[in-house]
Image 1 (cartoon, rainbow, N blue to C red):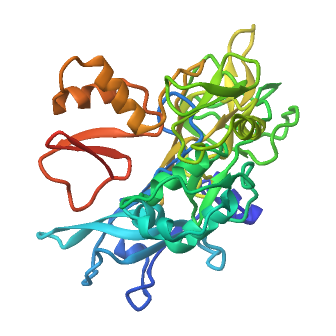
Image 2 (spheres, rainbow, N blue to C red; image 1 turned 180 degrees about the vertical axis):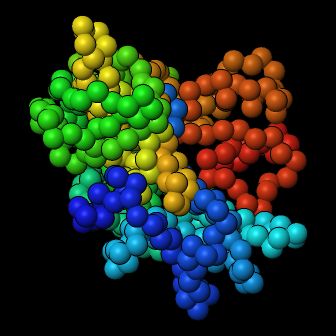
Length: 449
């Protein structure tokens, strides 16, 4: 995110009065400020990867929460935009969130409204049937034409980018009465080796993370305090690291694994677990594209080219799993690199090494006492996993000698690797508001929200 060095320094040094602006475009421009926000009740959750296996899909909705008071308006279903800055920088606001108010809970005793909001991906794609649009398309189309048409239909803007497999030609495979927009976007991301996310500007962004090796860089630093590890000093000398990373000024807690997630060195494409596959790369740590709707009907030569294009976009990507509580930096986004100076006591005297981490999940909390929780999960070697729901269900049916009960299906799905972030919930009726990352089991039927 491009902001001035002066404003960035204010957040890095936790300096100055933080100013929040909450704007409702559909309520005649209703604008709220710090005086309408209860304490430090603001929370922003963002993610591009959940689970321990790498899957280049993302498409996980961001969530914004806060508690308001003195607002006598109906807010549910309204568009919302949130910005933050520091006193003295009112003309330079950092966008935090754009989306819709999903739920409003009011405390009758004090008239506080607790609002939970989801981004445009949730509202425009997660529960959107686009079968009419699909059935009216004139095939064949390139992947680029297909995604442009889809996003136009659901009114979701895209950040301009050329994706690795944009030139793949798609033919009509079926006529359907139910096609989910979010499922199609996930398939597009998977087939291009990118993480999809609706960014702070409310546009669909396809994130390709750097494949540069993020190593450890020795340096000599002054001894830190007993509580915080300061990470900026004029006496430091370090090797060059990624220019797009952010040096975190202070952190309260840090845990990281002693291993790096092993880089992808092979891409496999197949229709299902039992079908023949094509692959590119000669390694053993494979990224598997399985059951993707856009590979049906393609010959092996086309699939081979797709696998090569994906490989070129993801090969060499590695990261270190970690979890850190740091000073709140609203300009840092998921997919960014953050750097910390880590104490090394292996020698006769303490020294410090600089380590870089990819932010896969983050939760930003507070206003004045702004804090960030950055994290990234991961296993050292990629596990074999099934990325499409239908294949998961077929696999479950093979394992059970009788028709599975709802409880058995729920347990078996949750026991499997689900790197897209799916969880399972048993319900008697579908809720009116559904989480896009939850599989709802209703009277034995499985519905993807």
